[in-house]
Image (cartoon, rainbow, N blue to C red; front, top):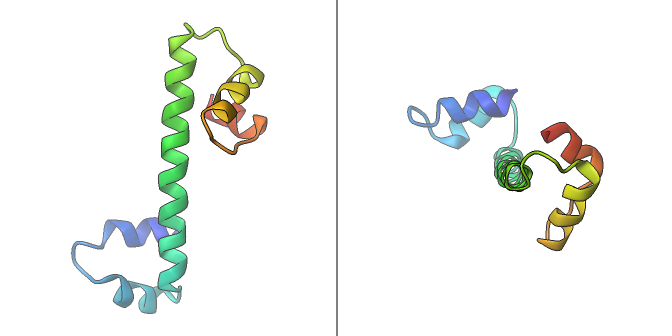
Length: 82
């Protein structure tokens, strides 16, 4: 939650200043940002595959497609995206 708050205020303050005010590390913020970007890309890929197959595929089939595309993901993660 703190990291999302930070992202909204980066236009006004530098990362190091916001981190010190909130009591978090800047490396933690950048790790969260990287994870959020990967999650967004995976979600976009899953939704694209789902609709390309006319909403007929379930999580197990999408898991197979995602792993062939190089994503390291679990069936549960795909189920949450759907």
